[in-house]
Image 1: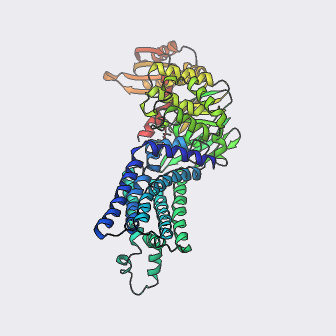
Image 2: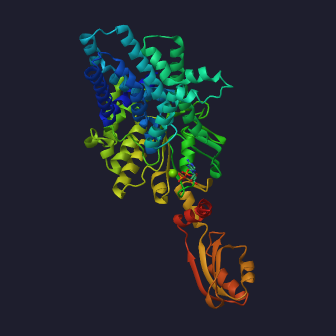
Image 3: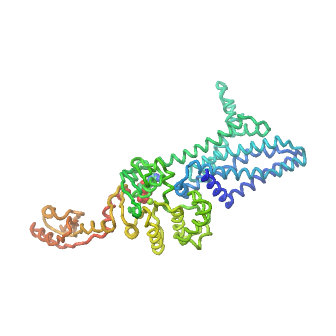
Amino acid sequence: MGRAWTIYKKELKSYYESPIAYIFMVVFLAVAVWVFFRGFFLIGEVSLRGLFGIIPWLCLFFIPAISMRLWAEERKTGTNELLFSLPVEEWEVVLGKYLAALLVYTVTLLLTLPVAICVSFLGNLDWGVAIGSYVGALFLGAAVLSIGTFVSSLTTNQIVAFILGVIVVAGLMIVGEPIVTMFIPSSLPWLVPYAQYLGLAQHFSSIARGVLDTRDFIYYLLLIVFPLYLTINAIRARKVG
Amino acid sequence: MIEIEHLSRRFGATVAVDDVSFEVKPGEIVGFLGPNGAGKTTTMRVTAGLIYPHAGTVRVNGLDVLEDPVSVRRQMGYLPEDTPLYDDMPVIDFLRFIGSIRGIRRADLSRKVSEMVEVCSLGNMAYKDIGELSRGYRQRVGLAQALIHDPPVLILDEPTSGLDPTQIVEIRRLVRDIGRQKAILFSTHILDEAQKTSDRIVVISGGRIVAEGSADTLARQVHGRDIYQVEFSGDLPALKDKLAHLLEVATEKEAEGGWAHISFASKTNDDVSADIFDAAVAVGGRLRRLEKQAATLEEVFLELTRGGEEEAQA
Ligand SMILES: Nc1ncnc2c1ncn2[C@@H]1O[C@H](COP(=O)(O)OP(=O)(O)O)[C@@H](O)[C@H]1O
Ligand SMILES: [Mg+2]
């Protein structure tokens, strides 16, 4: 665990010193604030609904940009050879890297708190719902990040990792939407709830409404753990091939 | 310290390492010599547990790499080929990172890092980003990270490649200095390098060990096989037959005007020029060239590894 922590700190430092994390934060915040003010001035609505409506899209495009380098860069420059010549287990490295990227996302998310505070002054904010939304956004981002991590471990090209990440996450986002479920043949009606359960955004919106359901949390937990597990396996498999 | 037994490793259809066995004892510096593609890196990667072997075993300090890779790596410093390092990290931070993953306690970390900066003469570069360093300094950072935990076993994959002669001398001195108590395996494709740095040379070619011994032993073996360049016209099979107990044909080609150009490798240490002359006369042929060449270590190396190169290119 100590070694996972060392990896975590090192990775964090490299985010801290590279532009990508800042660009991510600035763009994420700019979009969030812009959406909020648009709602405020155009519809005269004081709420966080706009902000949390846009978060799945921000996750879709920006989290793969954070995760793309995690493993692709390591393999491209050959530093994974150095890393794994150290007395570390694969899971320690995978976890350390993942947590560092997750912190970058969490901090970005927390940077939108002033918007929430604004809302609470200007209108009447339901803090229960707001906290639910933040928790939901955290889980959503954590799941997308885990998928991005796995995708990054499959290639040495960061751009490929980014595009593949967006595609996989987009697929998961739309799988539960009517646009997909309406193509499920009527002879297989039992498939529909499964497709809906698989859909990423579905669970997010129910958490964001302040409904904290264990099924949603189990879904996200699986979506966090499984890709990380696959990442560890992908790294191990390369030793055999 | 390092015991490699019947190691084999393929990549798809390529057999990178084929039934390789050798060992490195404590206090010994072994030069792992072979042309590009011979299987040096693959052997070393298996030894560090970076890839798995398809057959055979590797033990480091009695521990099987497959069974306990983390303990093996704890006792080992490893310098990967081409020195991949985290270019965005300052030298000091990088060494601290390696040190703390290597389990050096926080209280000792700064001292250990300064020690490495000192030993590897990194003084002026300590606060620079690794990406800004010259090839020579980079290599020293690579050595420093391999040495920071004072491991009993060191594996260095081409530690001097791409360096200029002065840098090579420095790295060589460094390796010799630290090598007194350690078991060191370093690879190179340059004979001179292996000869100057190591106590013993293991020559690999086409994935197989083709020779092994101290530089002197290898050289002596070579001097036992002097080469005779002969140009002869006449009954060639009869000549070869007459000389068969002394010489074997290394190469043979037809030169212009019925002159055959043969190089013989001798089977003894004695000068057999007179015997060749007598044999040529005895079979009623004519000689126009008879030249004895003491083979150099280079020639033996080329000779030993020629098959491997052809295999690799095929
Ligand atoms: N990761 C790999 N994938 C496919 N082939 C490889 C890989 N690594 C090495 N090889 C092949 O195995 C052989 C030995 O390579 P290597 O061990 O790198 O030799 P050396 O280090 O002596 O130059 C070469 O033919 C090389 O092409
Ligand atoms: Mg090599």
